[in-house]
Image 1 (tube, one colour):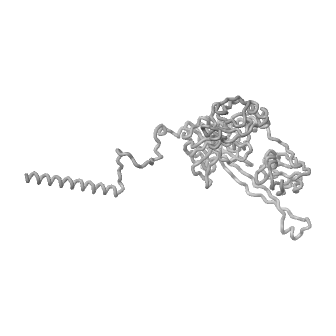
Image 2 (cartoon, one colour):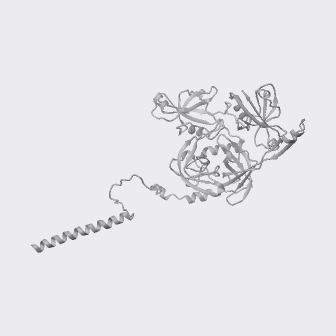
Image 3 (spheres, rainbow, N blue to C red):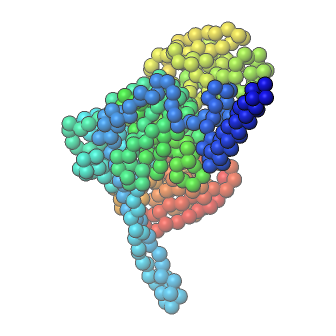
Length: 487
């Protein structure tokens, strides 16, 4: 019995010694940073690695889309010639005076800019942003194969920030149009462009949101319904391509949201369905044919939804009806809520503007509205801004306002005066402008520090102005002048 008891005690001591040695070794491993989680237990950490995609995305291949599109995205370089300015020599005036002033001229240095563009047809038509080529004296396009061409402007649309330019060449690689209505939040996309003059750059991300209005455009009839992505876009990407994983064009990259001017996670592209319509109009007519329903609108918010007893905070509220508009003729009422255009649901104002922006005056659409809890579908024939279905071929050329007659200047005058824009006062009668000291022949280039490119913009700037106004411009002899007065 003593022998058996001794063996049992010895075995027990050996077991405890083994356990103590194992624990000591295990603690040593942990202190060395080699901690192994027990995968059998319920994990307490709710955070997971975000760079390990699960499911179908593991098979996404970006190389095919990159190869299909990189050769169809071009580098757009612009030159803005420096203006020649005239000034009076103050020393000569002081010494001699008596009206014997001596005039001197100097020329500002040329400025340069760059962006991107997308070849949309084999015969040299290229879509880009209006802000990329706006006011440029010379436009140069460089292909991915390093060949360089001079480009001409076919047309621009400040309302959507789209421009159409052309180079003289054939058999060019082009990108196939996709369908931006079918783009889904969360799907993979590629941004192709030339950031910081780094040509043929491809970045990847996902669609973060649709129908974004970032209030970046200043045109009276602006349409902002951007596709938001987290694909890296930087200065120089503007005008470049946003494509899906099969290489179809789904947008034109246009802007970034950044406190520094460089990419910080948010980029915005113009939907390709809007681009397609705009460039087609510019190619056929030289100007976009803008269509209107004939209503004034606002977003549905939570307070409005509660007041109207709506189940969803979505749709577009009609807060006014245009007297000669199609909507009024078809029975649309103030207080109706627009839910669909044809079969496409619209959640907010940008999405509604995007859908209407795809059509021309004279096109027929089906508008679905909510009224007193009931959905009603009404056929609408879209009209232009003048209330008819005619094609608008040009802007208003002549304007009479405040006793002055305004006319647009031609390219020859622009070159002679070293300006990229302006409207000339061709006749001047009694009124605010004459009283302020402005003389006939004066070319207005800016009103309240905003560039003036046509008579529509003069009317917008002066018709609705209250208080002080600042007008800048240049006379035919090259003398620049500034006038401030009240309206």
